Length: 233
Image: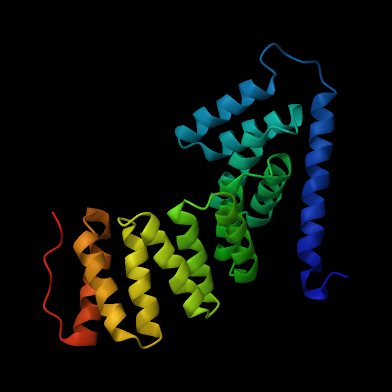
């Protein structure tokens, strides 16, 4: 039985599916033009997306899946596009469809986890991220996302385990060092918090992230009258 508070979400998903099927049926009843192929419209969508024209890209990918409902790439791209537009129910619908077409798509699970995480549905995000790391156990980004979701659920030990796995796979995954410092600080393990904030400062050399370096330095000053460390060149 569907929980009463979620009836509107189920209804919306069913409405989206019905609208999609109806739109595709209308299009398929028209004569086929020389360029009216799924591949053509998919490629047009990619061109529009690269140009920053999100609405035109969505339209082209929508036509592509009308012509070929099993085109994995179009469903996946629509999931990403709708996520960026903040249309999360549509994003989930297309990502789930992509997974039905290609069950071993770790990145589809990961992106679905990102949508659930953004919607603060952390249990669903964790489930999706676990599927991603199970399929592709050597991608540090998946462990990083899983660790962040565990932290949001208040599962600090699980968060630490996944974030440490991210840096084990990729010692230069700098964002994981900052978040490890944050989790250790949260649980009162200041020695490890200091260690990971130091590691973050030493490794972070992206100009766009210097604000986070300053935040890490401030945290270190608070934790341990810390003397600044020169960032790595």
